[in-house]
Image 1 (tube, helix red, strand yellow):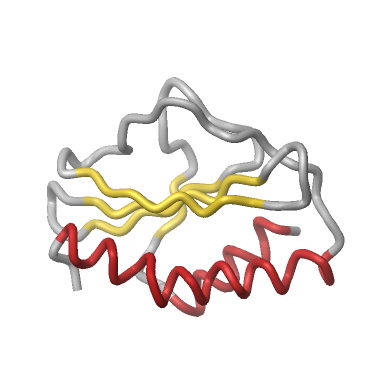
Image 2 (tube, rainbow, N blue to C red):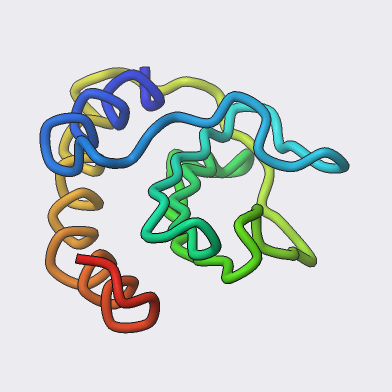
Amino acid sequence: MLRELFAEGLAATSPDFEFVRRHQPLVGIPGERAYRRAVSPDVVQWLVLVPDAKREAFFLEVGWSRCGRFPQQTMRPSFVREAARDRVAPRVDEALAMWLELGRPFLERHTGGA
């Protein structure tokens, strides 16, 4: 439910980000979803929705790569069981609002994308 709500919200607010089925060859946390936006052939902006396995929570990772690939990573949070839509939807809306207010402008400043 979280993944579907986020995908719908992101499509409505940032349709230029595309879902990436397999974003990292070595590691993929169950339940996470990655989205990318190519600013240029070499510069790619990334959003990764990462559910938390221990709480009814999630993380929205924001990053970029100047190598045209998924950024290097160290430690990652794990996934959480699906929660009820009425508890999850307000958090997804809040995360998307914060993404538009802070995350997207941050990426734009650092990658030159508009």
